[in-house]
Image (cartoon, helix red, strand yellow):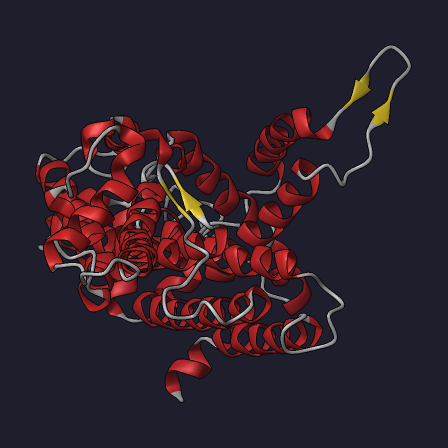
Amino acid sequence: MTFVKKNPSVLWFLVILAVFTLAVTLMSPGTGTGVISTSFVKTLGKTLCLAMVALAMDLVWGYTGILSLGHMAFFAVGGYMIGMWLMYARTEEIVFAALAKSPIPPTPAELHDGIASQIFGVVGSSKMPAIWAFAGSLPAQLALVVLVPAALALAFGWLAFRSRVAGVYLSILTQAMTLALALWLFQNDSGLRGNNGLSGLQNIPGLNHVPQEWLSIWFFWASAAALALAYVLLAWVVSGKFGSVIRAIRDDEQRVRFLGYPVEGYKLFVFALTAVIAGIGGALYYPQAGIINPAELAPIASIYLAVWVAIGGRGRLYGAVMGAVFVSLLSSWFTGGRAPDVPLGFATIHWVDWWQVLLGLAFVLVTLFAPQGLGGLVDLITGRRAPPRHGAPLGPDTGSLQEREAEE
């Protein structure tokens, strides 16, 4: 109860998410009236997954001060891990059904070779790469959804934080990590089908008889539950002493280090935790998207993520969710061709081409004139105000309400 009293936004968030989930359920084709389409249910489910990775970004950037431009890489890695099982198990069903028609039952070796040829024939290979060793096991791949992003984050974070790389240099390093991983995945010999990526992920093995309108709402429920758990977990993390320490690291890292706190250890834990949350979000996102390829790891995706959090209002978990949901749905509307073109006489604005310009302009305007972002609207409605400054600010981030946070 103490946690809820200190964090009333958590209860409000869960209530709003529950009402939203119920409304979508009642309007979906599979469980309700069918007012909204199956594709839109999938869009909403994917949006909730993007809100998860936005939460992770807010913890690592808004609360700890680490501007990571690589967290969408962890998101995509989680998608690749679950995608390997989805593609392997689905192909196994197809190959087994084809070989079962022969007079002699197929041997395990023949089945294995058939699966490998079916999956990797598109890149001119008929051998199963070593990294697919556990692809036939769902529990193993689910474990890898957590372990691989965590291991990647721990390895990168340990090298970067122990060297005390910070600021823009750390951002450049995270972006370089993302680019290197994407370039490796583009190669056909990476073991993940190169530029072709993994496809057909919307076909869930063993559930061929279940229509997509049911699968879409099931994944939507799973995405909503995962977002709720992630929000509660991160709200709990930032509400206690740990949260006070990471905010202090954000505001004055050297002072925290001089006080005897293991700054690198705190940073490494946050970096790894947020990588895991991003990986889980990706594992739920890509079965709804149906495909994943190396383009999903492009550095621009992580830059978009930072823009979402900035527009939503960093340093506020609900702000990160608001930013991700608002920009993601608006992007789908503009890029999906549903936004009407704007004729200017001498030219016509096609939003499919100009959407990124509009997003960049929104980012600049929010940064200059509304640093609290959309989360500031919640503060305005609830009457939350920045405490009076009796002298110099307590930290460099004037939008983070350091004085109130210190009192908590």
